Length: 130
Image 1 (cartoon, rainbow, N blue to C red):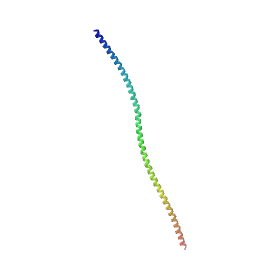
Image 2: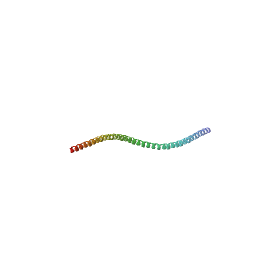
Image 3: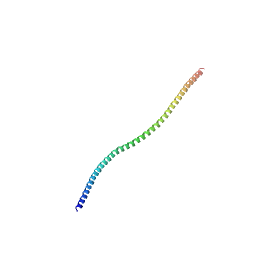
């Protein structure tokens, strides 16, 4: 009977030792879980902190793309306007040249007209004087 008691006591002590060991392991696991939860919360808040600038950067990128598109359109319009301006400038230059040529022809005609009028008047006066 004592042997059985001794065996049972040993078994009980072994079980108690095993329970103590499991309780210590449970405490370690709980501490690790708490630490992991804290790390998870830190990482989660860090992710949120990073998400806000990332979203801002995304909206800034979209805004810059829109501005670039507007700039490229304006640049294209400016190129078209410059081409039109060059064409109009050439036409104006040609028109000025034509005007100058015609004006010189007009001056020659006017000079010739004056000369013919003077000759005509001179001939008229000559014929009246006779």
